[in-house]
Image (cartoon, rainbow, N blue to C red; front, side):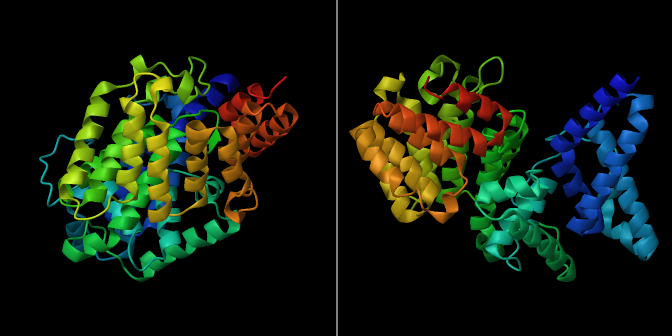
Length: 418
C-alpha cells in the first residue's frame, strides 16, 4: 500500500510540475494576482495528494488540477468582493470545462492565450529586468529558486528576493492580465523574448533533476515563439528566436541515448534530426532577414549558428570558421561570458585546441562563471585534446561536482580520462 501511495505521489508531483504554468496562468485570470494564483495551484496539488491515492489518478490530471484551482479561486473572489461584479469581470474564466489547446478560434491580434498573457504580465515595465526574468522562469518554467539562480548566474538569496518583490509589485500596482497592444507590447518584447529563450534552455538541458531534457518546457517555449510570430510579424528578432528554437528542437530525439544520458553533438545520429523543424527554422530565419532594417540581432545570430550545424550532413563537415565569426558578431552585439565560452569552443574547432584554451583561460576568473560547470567541462575537453590528461581529469571532476543534473553528472564522470 505504501509503495502504491509513493508511486501515486510521484506521479502527482510529475504532473504538477508539467501543468503548473498553465494552472497558474488560468487562475491568474480569475484572481488577477500571480502570488495568490501560485498559492491556489499549490492548494490543488495538496488536494490531489489527499484524494488521488484512494480515488485513483483521473484520466486528465491536468484538467482536474486546473478545475480544482479555479474553483478555489472563484470561492476566494466570492468571499472577498462583490459577488456579481466579480463574476462578470472574470467572465468565461469561471467555466471549468477542459478545452484542448487550439480548439478555439484564433485571432492573432486579439490573442486569448493565458500562458502568453502570463509572460507579458511577468515582463511588465514596473519590474526590473532581472525580476522579470526570475518571475517568469518561476511561474512559466516551473523552476525552483536554486535552478533560476544557476540559469541566470546570480546568488540564490538574491533571486528569491526578486521573485517575492516582483509578485508584491504586480499586486500593488494592479497590473492588468493581458497581452498589451502597440508601443506597450513593443516595450516589453525584449524581456518576453529573453524569458521564452531561458524557458527553452531549461528544457533543452535541465539545470537539475534526474532527466537531462524537459521536453514540455521546450514545447511551451516553441509554441509561445510561434504565437509571437503571428502577433508581431514585422519584428526580426521574434522570427530570429523562433528560428533558433525550431532548429534546436530538431535535434531533441538525437540528444539523449536510450538510457537518458546526453549524447555529444559530434556523436549524434543526424538521421534522427527532424527535417520539418529544420525547414521551419530556415523559413523563420529567412523572414528575420527579410524584415530586418540593419545588422542581425542576437537571436538571429544564434539561429544562424544553429543553421550552420543543421547544414552539415556530418560533424566533420561543420563550417567552424563561419561559426566562430558568427560568435564574434554575437559577442559584439550581446557580450556575455557564456557567449565567450561558446566562441572559445568554435575557435578551438576552427584553429585548434590551444587557441580555444587561451580564450577559456581568460574566463576562469570571471565572477559570473564561478560555479558554472560548463566552463570546467569545456576546459577539460580542450586539455584532453592537448594531451594534458591530469589537468583534464581535474576539470571533469570539478564539472561533475558542480552540476545538479544527475544525468549530466554521470556523463561527465564518464568523460574523466583514465
